[in-house]
Image (cartoon, rainbow, N blue to C red; front, side, top):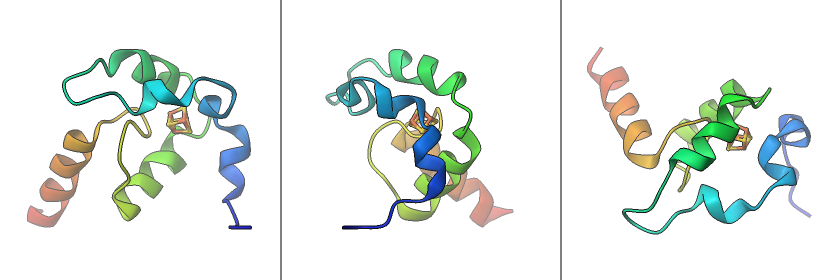
Length: 76
Ligand code: SF4
């Protein structure tokens, strides 16, 4: 079994419908982002998603937002 980082045990999304974190193209991301806003492991989640180029909403950000964050960091 793949080892999961400890922070995932505190993830709000672990107790919710994961489908809202992976909306269809052009779909709503606000419901997932609202849950992320109250998640105690948001920072760890965002860092992991930036590192591993995850799909969907992670750490309160969309894939496009994380791509912009990576580009901004690379340009700095
Ligand atoms: S920040 Fe959002 S996607 Fe990340 S663990 Fe928390 S609820 Fe899940």
